[in-house]
Image (cartoon, rainbow over all chains, first blue to last red; front, side, top):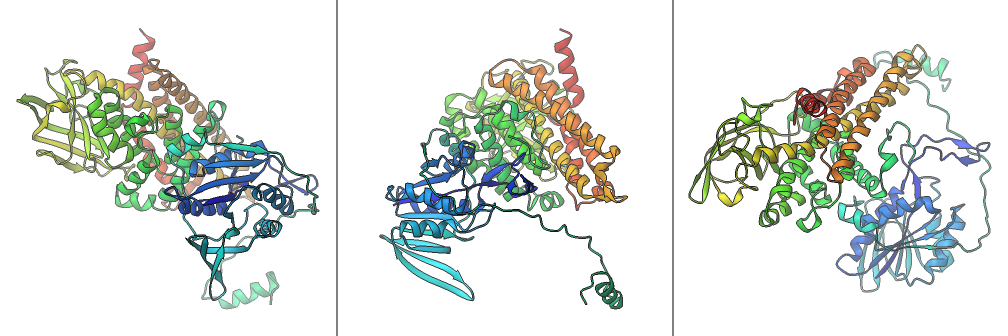
Length: 245
Length: 390
């Protein structure tokens, strides 16, 4: 079984966000980048599915050379090899088209993605990728097991779950709970240095979107605590200060 | 790599390879996931988290310096220091246990054990299957270790051990201990030997567990030897070489405790820096006041100076150069900065810092061990002075 796991290089979860160029561009100055936590879940499950010689895991990233530490981390966690498409990921369509270009000739049985990347949270790439490849697409899966070339997949839906059977090849995006993210061990870190990391040049793709402006949310105001014994004060504050009643 | 928000980077970034950063990130991930949720519970109850330590073994954090052929990671002191720093930024107790396991027990067997001994014990120590202890100090011989009174007398194929070792990290939970014993006259530097004692050996037991100010989740107990018969093949190196071996082990151990100190200092600093930006008084963040800003500037400067001293000693150790003075300088300076910076962090937090709701209270308590354990600051100054006055 050949699994391709799509990974993103995203700002650390504790990043203080700011913008450049008249609020049209994320300011990366001083920002530490990490492997997208949702992609770590997909990667962990891919490694579990191929354990014991049952297959291989390739990770793929659309990014410039500065994403290689993140790719190396994925290799340290247990991916067998990696591909970096040498381009800045300008939007979801661009990324999906680039991934598809490599994926279509790779003979992969499954393409796994995290549910979304934690930078722009678009959650669009998995479905777009499947569409471009003309593969079945199953989003937000909670469980995946295999029998031969068929996968049994649980998908969470409101009030219950959907059980799906699908034949390879297909694309999935993984929800939390599919697998526990793995922390790389020392041996993994050392072997990651010598695992294959192939760099391929991007294909020409039309840019379909651009950012007009980013806005920061309004800062939260100070919390005012009112004793439960004084409901009149609460009503007064909601009326006069918060002006919500 | 540039610094992110409140996280202190600094000297390591000047010289470290990608693998050092990956090891640091791995240790950080581990600490956040497996240590941060419980460290205050362990501290309150004085629980030694053996299972957490064993998980660290699975990741290779308990045999960082040991060659791969014996089950270790085969890495150098830069990676080792980076890992201890990240663990200690979250919990000094676990950092201390990691440091003691790696550099004392495991390190002693790695440097002075024969092939058979290495294969027998290192493989289990590196994976965390066994936890290691190391016994030098006694109730009446701390800095004056040469006057130790625990004896080992040869009787046929065994040495018979009698006496007690105090302040031993993992003295109860350790599965194996390297013990310095008297095989010659008191005061004779050739009268001390190092021998390995396995848990379960008749006559080997744990005594009092210390109730400590800090480092409360790192187990510290007495080890008692009462007519404990140990196979003579458990002797490490030549009979009579134990004291010299122990001094060499402590040279490396000083780097460990310096790294532990650096981690605690960074943890306290980062907590204080973040708090100073969030805490408002007189209508503005307290970081706007020079009284606080200057404290943070001093903390950052001294922490980076500590880091550079540690890097110097680690570099020399990696190159196999004698670094007794440099490791003593790193340990002395970093541990004193650790205590000072933790104190300043509590001061920046004010009343909140005096409570257990914020981490600086624990950093403050944990920090004090660093100027005492594995050679007090005064002993470090003696070591440094002896070298510079030579």
